[in-house]
Amino acid sequence: MNLIITAIVFSVVFVGTGFGLKHAGAAETELGQTTWRLTHLGERAVDSEALLEFDLVEKRFAGSGGCNRIFGGIEASGATIKFTGVGSTRMACLADGVMENEAAFIAALQKATSFRIADGKLKLMNGRRVLAKFKAADAETETATSDLEAKKWMLASIKGTAVRELEEAAFLVFDREKASAGGNSGCNAFGGSYESKRSTIRIFDMVSTMRACIEDDRMDIERGLLGGLQGANRFEIRDGQLHLFNGETELLVFTGTGK
Image (cartoon, rainbow, N blue to C red; front, side, top):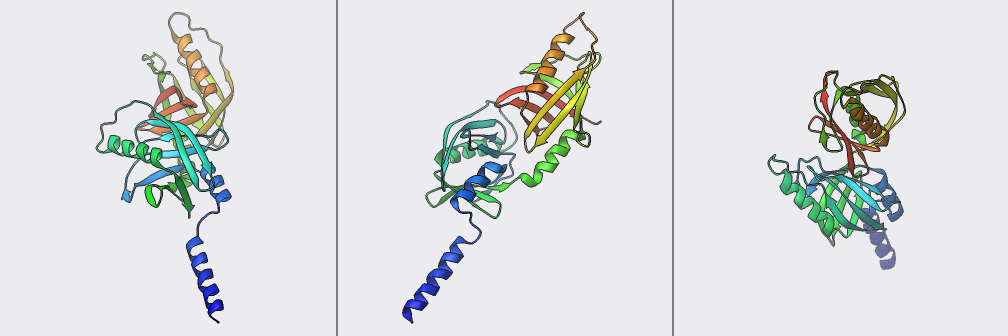
């Protein structure tokens, strides 16, 4: 009888502690298939734009620290995790607490040794200490894609160089229903197709009119714009601006206006 009771107690404890948790293989898969938005540093709730995305094939991660883009290497096996070569861009954001939270976030990544996923939430841990908590942001994918379509995007810079004000402003618009992206380079009208999922984007099959604007630098601006659009594989929308990247390299920045 004692043996039966012991077995029942053990079973209850085992089921109770395992409820909602992913087994190692499933956890790794979900880790790499989800955009994770920061909700807590330790046990402190934070209102932050910080997020992480993992590429477990390339063993890399990228995301936002809340102000700067962050990136580096990732090693994940079972429930263990290690962030390597953590780097970031060097912008300063003046809003209260943003830089402090970003520094604490990066420090948490560097200290993390394990992770746990349950009920659409990710915890990064060091031993039994919770360093950071995240929620799955896939539900926000539709919103992010809709945000692309919601505005007319005016070209602001190409590879970090501000674009001068043009007589006919360069702009970009998206039409999700038609899966099309197009606009004007400041010289020629252009258009093509696009695909977007989470923070990834692909703009392809570009065509344009053939007007030659040789009296100033508009052709250089056009080459930079069209080349950036076709080279982009990731986007971010923050502070009313659309940023297009290839990996960690920022290609184009647009400022949103009403359509």
